[in-house]
Image 1 (spheres, rainbow, N blue to C red):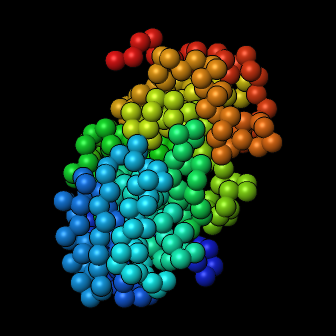
Image 2 (tube, rainbow, N blue to C red):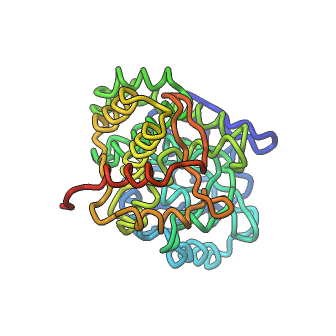
Length: 363
């Protein structure tokens, strides 16, 4: 087992990474301060891992709530199912919520924990690659609104993160690729050495080589932990973690939540950010080609839906969280491993980027 830490003073917490960690009471117990525990999972993950997780919680008063699976259910109506379960079971302010699932479960459980009785503890047990390397770390929680992704939420740090790499055995190839998108992001935005390593080892990642996966998860978690420790609430450096997300969130919302996986949209979004960077003269064509190559090798799409033209993108991006004083902020590249936040862009270049990355037809 590998352990990394998010350093936030009194709210610091460990990230445990390894195989067969689910149901490990010795990992769970030190991070649970009360007697009541509510496990939140979904219809896909619960049949696989709920029983094992609850075994690790056998010394506590444990209940569970099972949500429908999918990004389209990340909304207020489904969030209320968590609150209903907490109230029906008379959970108090010393309770702990446990998020057992992917990014949707983690985001919703964290938001419920931030809101219930004005804030209770929670633990992240991410079961997808994307949630292990990104969404479970850093304390961003929330739900979607029809007009924008993650527009309702709170910063609320978990007590710990338990990333069991064994849970990736049941992950389908599409979900695996979606997780690799967020791994690529860390290399592009600030870790050129890691990007080089990914170019060399992408085939092993796609083929689920365990040692390669563990290293990629560990390196990604460390990169994110370092950024979060420096800027917990995204007032500066943490915004770089949104590389690809301005375009990506627009694609997710525009296509309809659940049609594109988050990592798929981020993959296309990162390529569009690189394309815009190239049109602005910040990176050269070989750098753009390296970016496209690694995204394609990861099995990710490189074109947005054909119906998403410039006006469609602008409508969606204008309600993104990264808008400041009416100006859209993009995270763009100066080089591989060197990203910047900017609202200075040429609209003609942006139009060209969007048109260059629209699919000719949609299947």
